[in-house]
Amino acid sequence: MKKRTEKIYHYDVVLDPNGEGYTVTVPDIPGLVTEGSNLSEARIMAKDAIRCALEAALKVRSFASATARRKARGENVVVKM
Image (tube, rainbow, N blue to C red; front, side, top):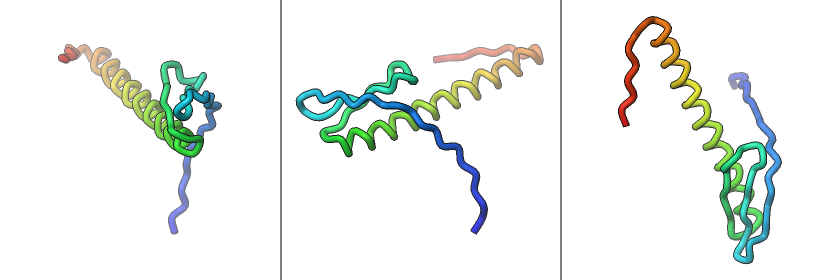
């Protein structure tokens, strides 16, 4: 079996009872909010939301780095939405 290297991040989450389950926020990731109908589901949803937030941040950083390299080479950079 091949040796693996992994980065494991630990975030504090706030599990707030909301009458129908739990609302989950992550103080270190502004704007991240999810919920679950019970504690187990809320924890699963929190892990998934953190993973998605980190993946999105890495994609944005990668895009920004590529854009900066193009600008440094004098290439015209146009973003269409």
